[in-house]
Image (cartoon, rainbow, N blue to C red):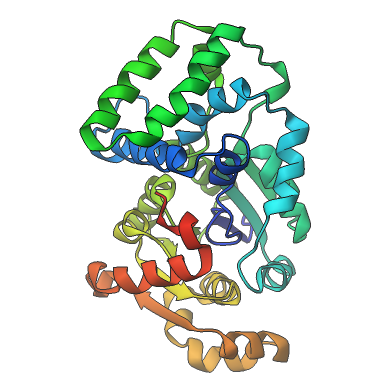
Length: 327
């Protein structure tokens, strides 16, 4: 059975907000804390390649701090709507795509946030996010105090000191109730993103596989799609996404994603190479949005990804601000 599906990350390609960062700022009142936690995640996943650890497991590490601060499911849902900021033209791009193709959104984001924000732009496809029931976790007062007191320390450390401290902190956390929280959470990143794509491709015998990502939590998914003859797309991606993709979009509009997804599913790489002629066949509103956008396409198999990294990072920073600098 053949189905017209496309696979995509959420934060970056469709929504600009880094929700874990927003939670850290709003609830924990410390942006640098989350930046350092994100660096630690990059180190464990990409440099150390720690067994059993996946890129995007930052959410596993972050959750005990949120629980210690008293966060509940309703708080996550409420903040989701308040901070949501989408890639320009995201709603129109998604509406256009869903007339022909079904989205499969695979995001490291907490599922409460993913569902709420996907609903805001009318996503009707399958949603895969990190499942956490904040309401069920209870910590002792001394555990809460110890966890919350660590926030400023984590924010103050750099490089080797940071890694040593966090290694010890999370090792000690295993012995407490908070350690159980980390054990239970299965963040949707790295290998788990790849396995979700693989399962759909095999179950539905998908001929043309396209996946879009922008960061370290996407690199295994992108690499798998690339190796299996599909189109692995970096959308304003950082070095991790670009290195493992075979196509790059640098753009300030989600219409650029809709164009590439539709063209690839219709006719593969050759259709994409003729996009300047093909765009004439699209509805006027679509053509207008695309022509107004600041968009560039790159076939990465024909280029050194380093050649466009600065351009991609610049657009990433322009759209996402501080959140664009995170892994």
